Image (cartoon, rainbow, N blue to C red; front, top):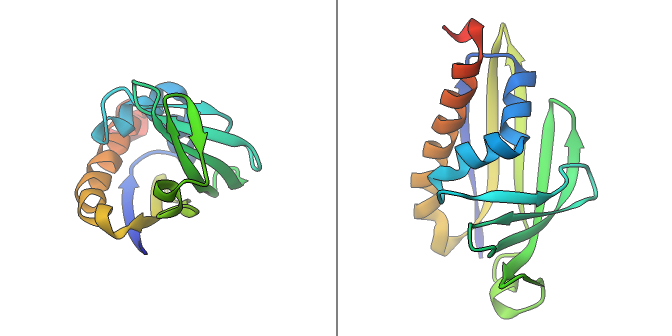
Length: 152
């Protein structure tokens, strides 16, 4: 059983900077450090493409980019997990939460970008996500605003 959680953050810089920072390898490592230091992704953010979200030891999650509308919306459909380099989308643990969606909506108004995240979350992880996701978005905000001359 899952619950959909929603989080949002206002970032005082242009949407293109937020988008590019969030999805770049370096930016992703920086803002996802709230979940685990050294997280990274392997794969493509293009619609229909496979992507893995991995911990430093190589374990993590496997997903497909369900939708990618440049500077507007990105939808990640989580399919299962990666353990010791092997993808599992049919095992009992994977099936307890997958498929699950992680959707990001971006709206820019007068130089400020609002990022909204809607996240399907297994009930056992709700408290963790409610605590950790706002920290991750705060890291994204800080990272973007430190790059933007208009945020000063």
